Image 1: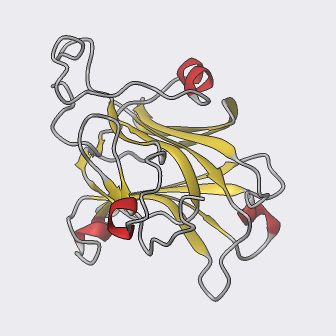
Image 2: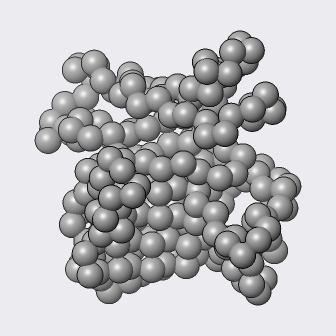
Length: 231
């Protein structure tokens, strides 16, 4: 089909790409220092048992040895199958107070899962895992960091596409453009697109809404929004 059935479809036969700009000034303190950049699961409730049975998590750890603080961890779970991939960013520490662009791709190839990491448009890490999972039509979860230009793609983006567009905004409008998008060669690849540039009205209820520019009307919400959230 044209991939219009679900904004957060995860089908590794087609591939998927998660990309975003991120700036971290430090790590969370306390006993739990796991920070999720992205969490997708196949249930409407994070408390549902299914959220543990089928999910995609992209995160980092601020605790422990230095390698954890420069690594992006990818975890895919489907039933009893678990796929764990560790990407070295090549940085001394992800929390270096610098805006950087990260793109993580995943795809099934020859009965294995392959994943690539790009940092600021440059290929940084290539990893494989012998396991694979099936397709998931999911929901998204909250993220914890300073973000900009967050895009979820229902396909694997290649090095040229990531390198060309990581600094540029991209078009949306995939919900109604039947001329440009079809079921054959021009599929709806862009699932969610948050630009975080709506401006500030002064009304917290309005300003906490993050508009989805993919054309799919999947607006997000700032959790624990305050007046400094968009600064």
